[in-house]
Image: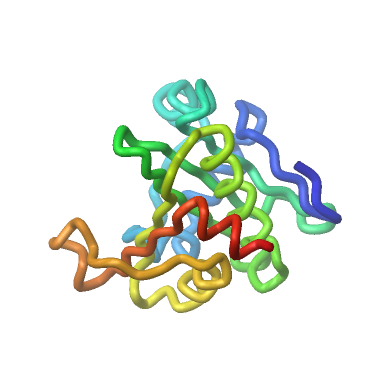
Length: 170
């Protein structure tokens, strides 16, 4: 997908240095519980992670590029057996506030519903991540009780039904 200056592609071996940099960045990873990053290598991603993504419509990982900024981050979805798809988006700090997250998340949502056949997409951002919450609300996500009571105190749980998403965009 190409949108103005933003290009979103399925992540391949060629993108793994960028993914490793993103996942090793503490500023990016602090909201997923890793304030010092993950300390991953391209090799470890290639061997343990890459074989499991983009093999079918149920699990896709995308690399997000900007014409001027280069690699900005990632978006992702994984459709579970219950028909719900977990979503995620992460951007380097220099790519935030430019509409890139909106475009990257929209791409993942569209594909989760259309290629992955999800009925519902969901996110569970940390309550401290106010910017992410604002982004999800723009798409029409609604808050529900968190199914994991162990993290409910620190995380929101938001869902978006396919019909609501389609109506929200029109």
